[in-house]
Length: 208
Image (cartoon, rainbow, N blue to C red):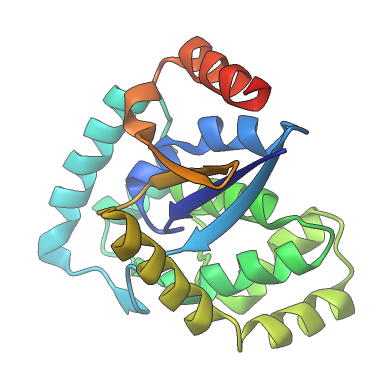
């Protein structure tokens, strides 16, 4: 079993670009995928002056990674509708889902899809509860997990920052492989649009 530490932020566009790569890891029985949320952005609306920059950056991400940004999301950013980003509430939901049968990676995927493709308000507790329901999580169990996770968010973010500092990592997404007492950084961006190379990398690492 290979321990893979994925350092990300739910509101990071480049992490959305890496979503298919991360999904393949979460489905690999030889890999123990550990999620480390980064706390990139406290709850706040994006400024109107920043909207065109975001749209341009998202186009670059789409071109380089092959990920599709949904029309509902693009229309929302381009319009006068409020677009609120909250790395901490979304991280709380991922930690809560991880408590429930290790579904953190699935919640991350649904948050990214909800935000970047469907234009949903993933900063709202009700929207996150809807995502949990769509995953088959019972409402009471979800609320209890969210209550527990509320106390875990800042320690998790602080742990992420310490991990990044210890290994000289900058920005999201970042990744570390922990194997046989050794740590190795993986440059995720090298594998955008290269699924075969990504699979070959992990086949080599899991057989080491």
